[in-house]
Amino acid sequence: SDKIRTVQDALESLVARESVQGYTTKTKQEVEISRRVTLEKLPPVLVLHLKRFVYEKTGGCQKLIKNIEYPVDLEISKVVYHHGNSATGGHYTTDVFQIGLNGWLRIDD
Image (cartoon, helix red, strand yellow):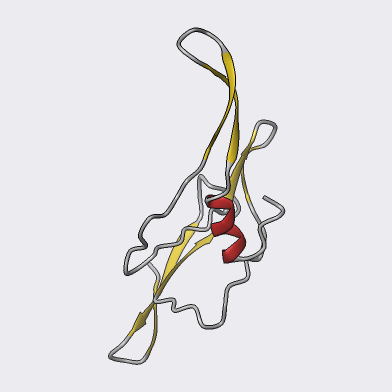
């Protein structure tokens, strides 16, 4: 979504109430309903997957070129990068923070 600019925006969007159109009951009566995702308890490590592709009817799967802001105090230990223009091809690399070396390792096949 164009409204999502930060990790906080993405998490708020994830748990926002969403209207569901065209829902009918067992008696075939159409009613207004909504649904919502809730996070009751966070795990010790939360994995964030920032979706970088969107499907468009006219152009198929397209890569999103968009920056997402995150707090400077966010602890990140692993990052996976996609290099390429499409969801059907490209190359992946990974950066992993190695505590023993107190630095980052690049994994690239």
